[in-house]
Amino acid sequence: MHYFTLVHLSTNSSNLLYMGISIMSSQIHEIKRIKVSPVKDNSILAKTRYLPSNLRLRVVEHPQNIKPYGNFVLADDAQKLAVLKSKGSFFGGLSDDLIMEIVNLLDTPDLIHLMHTSRYFYGFVSFDQIWRDLYIKRLLQQEQGKSIRFSKWRGSWRNSVLGIDCQSKINCDVVYSDMLYEQYQNSQVKYKDLFSNLIKEQEALRQQKPLVMKNSAPLKSYYKGRIPRIDEETFTMEDYNTNWYNHPFILQSADKNRWPKWTTDYLQDRFSDVKFRQESVEWRLSQYMDYARNNNDEKPLYLFDCNSNATRELGKEFSPPPYAKDDLLKVLGESRPDHLWLTVGPTRSGSGFHKDPNSTCAWNAVLQGAKLWIMFPPDMLPPGIHTDESESEVTAPVDVAEWVLSGFYNDAVKISDQAYNNQGLSCIIGMTFPGDCMYVPAQWWHAVINFEDTVALTANFVPSVRLEEVLKFFKNKQDQVSGFHAKKFRKHLEEFIVHEGDTLDKNMHSKFEKFLNASNMKDTDEDVGELHTSTIDLPAFEFLVEKLRRSKYSERLEKALDAIRKEENKTKPSGRSKLWENLAKEKSNRFSFSFNLGVS
Image 1 (cartoon, rainbow, N blue to C red):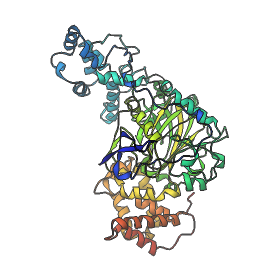
Image 2: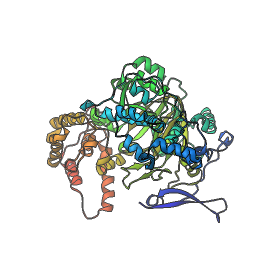
Image 3: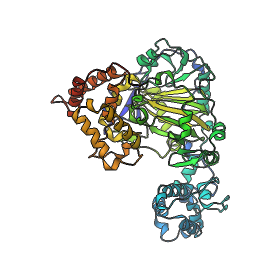
């Protein structure tokens, strides 16, 4: 992968300002300034969006007196000797990383014994991430009877696993560790204090009248580097399809009852004993809320649930934004990929930089709390983030707090202020509050931080204008397709073959049957994307094409397939793939469906 350094021409064109931000050179053709229409009131904008540059140097007192490793260099000889005695002769020569690898091999009784050997190991093993990792590792091994269970959250993973309500206050000043200290430092970030200028700005922008749509274009309509706010009542599908489908915006309604008034208290009263998915665990909501209100995790667990009966029930109690109602993945019915989530997260929770699955678009409506959004166009790699060529592997700091404290947020602000890609797009930053609905275009990088305890609804969808991109993703990146569940997919595909098998091309029919007969696809509800192998092709692309052909979207599908075919022929002029030949043959051999087969 090749990189180059962004260059920005300052007001004096003879002077160059170089920024050490890595962007994929194959995707950036030129850097240029874009003229933005003047705004009426720049005085409400923050005087600076930058954070202090010395955040990582700010001292946070650790409850066990653990210090950064740099302090060990300044310690006197007596203190250094005390450290070596407490670590022991063997461990004294090992790095923190290596000691952590050894400790992570131990089980609960061994960890307890190790804590009792010295003050050093009491402090080291008290590191809560060790106990969190142990709990989750054993949870994944529950079929072997190795799981660790607790029904009550006691303020930390260590206390909860051990079933104790307090922790001895032992002075562990013999522990000098960047690993232990920095993770605690990250867990103590006060985002509302840190971003107070930005919060004030975003609240002021929210009080302004949102943009009234008259075919306004994103780059000419709003404050530079901020996420535009649009009036929902005047926003039309023509506006979306013409100007806004590829640019983030916040939909704002004057109707105070536009979205449900769900809060953490409301959800706990209604679903206290219901289990929801929180990343790698699945707890009752009451237990999760105890955790959310009292933890010191560097990266708090985030309730992100799509498959519980409660989430399905809640999904019937609101209306999605207008641009998301005509969702082409609806043709897949119950077999479609996961697409609607209830999210609940405590302050400091959130998600690092990612692109939404399957090249879909998304919306996110905040019902309680406040979210910070940092967003980059598809071809601009966010600072601190690295990917392979296909973007199947993303390397990033451990969590968003580390990303912020390491200075990458300030790099994002600099890009937002000074650099653009060849389409005139750049990093934009904004916040959503209760009643706000964020639109996330397909393939845009975005990171989200919850500044308060937050409840939100989010969903992925495919608008007609984005069909080509989704088809290309399903066809060319099968190893990255996600969200399909094997049982539902198999059931729907079997029913489809029963009713439509006679109209299928022979090769297509054979491909579907091969998938259904695969032994590793039976009796599992795993994500089919996780089960993809080189010998079993997952027919997600083919199934979507066949379903669209039998729907009211058939004409739109053929236009998309034709456009993709022409694009492929430009890069592969020597011939067509068998897949396209089969699809084209199906089109010519099948009579035209002019009626809607129950697709909404």
